Length: 213
Image (cartoon, rainbow, N blue to C red; front, side, top):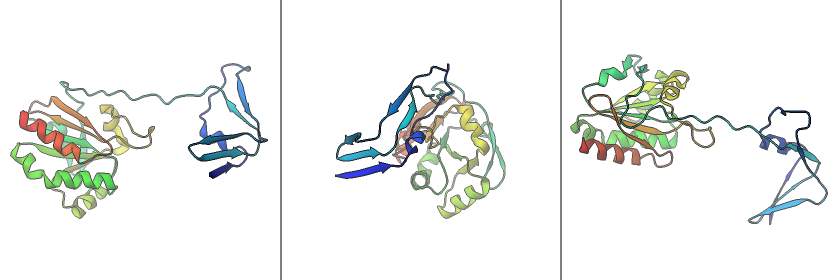
């Protein structure tokens, strides 16, 4: 049976803390001697007394600000060639706007290449494809060149547009969300699709929607 021993005070980092509301805030003690916990063949033990706050804080949730049938906030960002591109540039034709975590990551590369491989289908549907992440234009340029991407990549500095659109992060706030929007010719949202761990499915869902417009 595998076991993991934690040194003194290491478990403090596993529990978020909060300033006590009053001096009498409750503290739960953990005693050291022979206390052990067992989960599915994994045995955990610790070697020193620890005190863990009873109460803790939760990070505030991000609520989506863009919904189906609505018009998303406008934006102007730099593309991979350093040119300013606005959302209004695409009005009059459908546009697929997809937010992804980062250039060169495995899932994001698969997703970008899947959009590339189906790009002619998007063109036949009269739609433009725009990818957005927090990477700078130089990173986007290298990413697009390396993977022969024929569509626009925009640099969302400081993730401002993500916040404006209300895109929540995944994995307890660690990983930027992977979310795709389809806007019709009038700039109205017709589809919102979120799937962090199956990036290629974004292409299938967007094409299906575009064919119904």
